[in-house]
Length: 307
Image 1 (cartoon, rainbow, N blue to C red):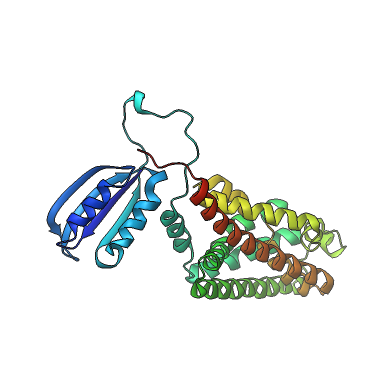
Image 2: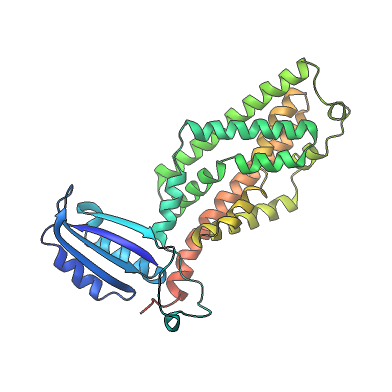
């Protein structure tokens, strides 16, 4: 269930109420005439079922209320209804695309903290590579914010928004470049100080070898992770989204590039660069295709709107 508040300019409230009356899934409509300011108008409150929300939001945009008024949407955590009204075995509902895109846009803010988190994740990954610690590698994957930019690029491709694609790709290039340079400097300092672990110097590098050796399984995992990432966003499954963070080798690959260059392992650095491009590229392609495919599938075969 979603709770919607609309500020309608004076003279347009009647059309809004007539429109809402003809849309299934809308209930609990409340009108406060003349109590809205900045912009001035009437405030209209109502609830709408998730699986009926997309046509409702489309109608609100059609009335120009996203431009001339104001629309606020809140997710309702619980509603108190009689047991007889509860639906058992309810089927999965169609994604509310306004909410999905809002979540993606909220993550696509490339402030200094985005680059700082990416650099810190790279450093954690570098320590994990030097010490052969898989736990630190997983930690670096969770800390890294790169998926927010990746899925923003995918959405931009799906919506043919060149600005979003450009901004996201630029953030990824700058962010990964900063992470690689920082991990290179860190690994060079460790090497110069003679603090590199003995096993790493002896070539015992199972973690690094796993990262810098992309193969067919890397492609499979990246594709599956891309599918899971799209489904987790469109169906609001945060736990599955965390699984995407710790299953795709992007941050560890960037860290391994810096570490390998610092220790003169050029072949390993090349393998990690390929791993990074492979995973990031597949996540973007699968993400864009998944978003577009879901729109088509739900449009044609989605659940009927709630009464």
